[in-house]
Length: 452
Image 1 (cartoon, rainbow, N blue to C red):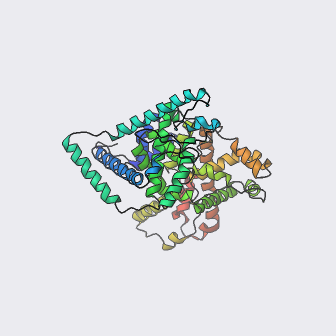
Image 2 (spheres, rainbow, N blue to C red; image 1 turned 120 degrees about the horizontal axis):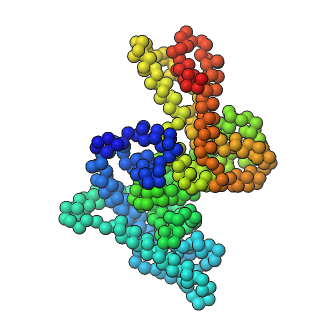
């Protein structure tokens, strides 16, 4: 940061990549800049004001859907009208379907304990009461405001401003209720092995639910899709703030929401297949046979940032490394433009117009996450070649969960990245560069020196 608290964004992204992520103690603050909640150009004096504005706006947004759909404030168990966990008390159903195998996954629900239920449930109930109490305390702390008159006036103005901003927002109630139904199925089983959601921390799942519903309500073009709960959970665990998680997650989804659509899914799969074909044609040909579902098994890896393939702390590191966008092929276009500009200034040469319309030598859609995915496939090449059908393929890829070495994978992925760039540059030069009168001025001849 500079003297006024501004962040150099390019240096931040480079630091994240070159250091293999950031330390856990710095991660919460870094993510607020990395994912766009705080503009890197903001000063230390401006950020508290921005924080207040975002907090008020989020509360107004959440209150709007809660007022329109008051029944949806309740979190339901197995689709029943079961357990109410909103502030102010509990409601008990006349009938409640209890899946004894999922009690630990449903620890947000205050169970109706009757004499015929096992005594062991009373212990579970005590844990659930603590979870609800924790959630209530967290919500109360979030709503505490300075009681000074000046502070109240400022908050009143911010709330009025937010109400005007969202006054004309309308909801498709049918679609929103369907989104809430899916959210209520996904949230209770989200990251249940993390300490953040164990014991009284189960109350954090209610916070996660509020964030996801608010996002779905105000982003109807995206709404909610399975997998968003896992991504949003990652933000909540790191930031430990409902408001900051909502805005950071929303900024992230501005860039990646298309990945949750059918078109986005197919596009990612096509790109991964194209990259593997460049790196290993034989393995690519094997995976696209009639008995395989092509590369669909890779989509979950790419969608969730390999969340389950690495140990949890490594998965967080990889997520921020991928999100820093430091090592992306699109940067070659930027360097090409900069080189032409420097060349023109040095020699008073105007770059040829046809340089802008040449076919690209490098596919800039091959993002670094695709190289990570390809690296995992190549490192398990022999095992994949032994897979003869979809079932064997899925069984094998499932066996990788939590077993991969991040540092080794990153090293291999960088090697594949640079080798791809080097080979593409040489191939292009061999096929097109010879026709130029001054080949040394060609961008790709300059690029060649980086890989020689």
